[in-house]
Image (cartoon, rainbow, N blue to C red; front, side, top):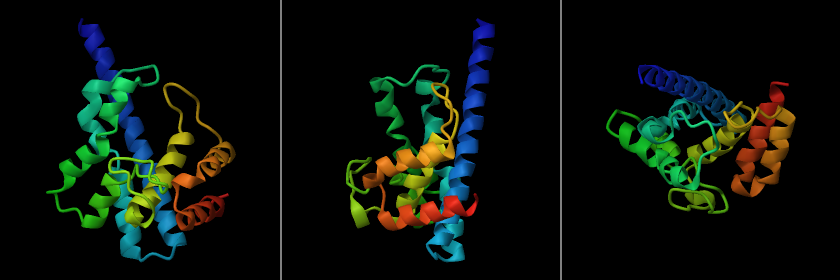
Length: 183
């Protein structure tokens, strides 16, 4: 029994490490996209903060998802989809700006209105969330997951293009420039 508990702690620790790496990747991408869009230094800094923290709500969900080695089932997805709200709730009284909080809360909204938590569309989605959305998707695609290997940058970009309806075109073009600037 103790051995099983140690194994679960190891899996949780490993997942937390991966979440931190993912947050850093999203943060760096969001900062670069903001720069490409000509946003102020302060706004780019706020994007970087929101990028690091965007999935912090998942910490409150580890009892549901920790240690799972197979792709999540539908029942688990309903909990995972609460992570933007849980992250917002965890951070709202900790001195973060409205920009950071809204970026976190709405980072799974799709430009066509098919996202969550509120099915916002287009310009109704805060700019920070629109930027985090594409950075989050790309970072997830280019990272190794328990259920699949990482996609190459080229393959990930093709997949993002296939789903371009989910993204603000102005943000998408800035994102492409930011990605290609490092090649």
